[in-house]
Amino acid sequence: MSERKVLTKYYPPDFDPSKITRTRAPRGDTPAGPKVQTVRLMAPFSMKCTSCGEYIYKGRKFNARKETTDEKYYSISIFRFYIRCTRCSAEITFKTDPKGMDYTCERGAKRNFEVWRAGGETAAGETDEERLDRLEAEMGEKSAMEELEAKVVDAKQEMAIADALDEIRTRNARNERAGGKEVVDVVKEEIDAERRRVEREDEEMARRAFMTETGERVRRIGEDEGEEDGIQVDGGNQAAATLMPPPPVPEFKRVLKKKKDLGAALGIKKKSALV
Image (tube, rainbow, N blue to C red; front, side):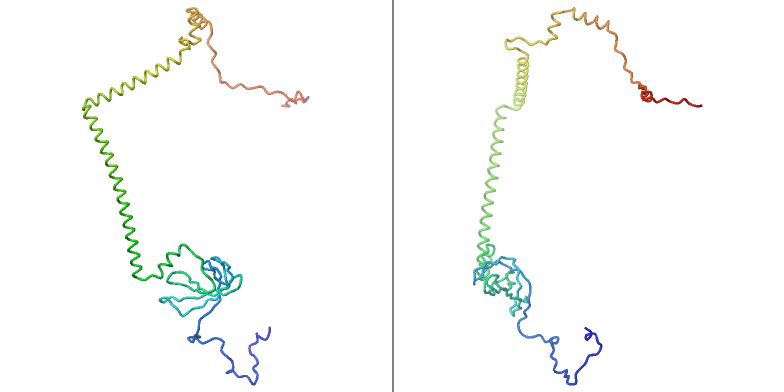
């Protein structure tokens, strides 16, 4: 420990500085060949190993080797990654695809089928003429669907307008047959007749509610006693009213209750005041 802290170190007599090799290349002199570094990544897509048939799901983590290839898409570098199967340790390689914004599996595994990539894969290998033809066909189908939808909307509007016209014509014909003032009189008579009918129904219901099964009118108990006693009941009520005094007026004055002398019950005698 103390040797590395000294200010001067011992150099033997046969020391030759020219024999010491430089461990790092000077700036500007980059070594030729691909750059490889170890990185930690997750599988960008689900795949199946071609050696053992093991399925590797998307998002599984690997310690991979990252290699910078000489290929470029415009000015974007393309990288190649090397991973190993989790079951048989076979090497699997895939690289980036800047054009399709995805990854391309090269060897060692087969990418699983994905529905959302089916259309993109077919469109990736087509030429400009094929792409133009496909776009024209899609636009033609779209325009045909738009025309069909517009026709359906127009047919619905025409049917609604025809129904409204029929209703207006029917109402005008009825008014012409009845006349101008006569229409108002007819409406008033219909309203009055309806009101009279409702009143008659209410009266009939009330009459049935106060009738017995034999057809007699139901009487209250007070009415029966008054009819039997006649004037005597009324006279008795008047005499009782004159003899009975008026009720007393209630008072709300506070009444103080006398406290009980508990000391006398316990045998305690109060001393008389000295003064």
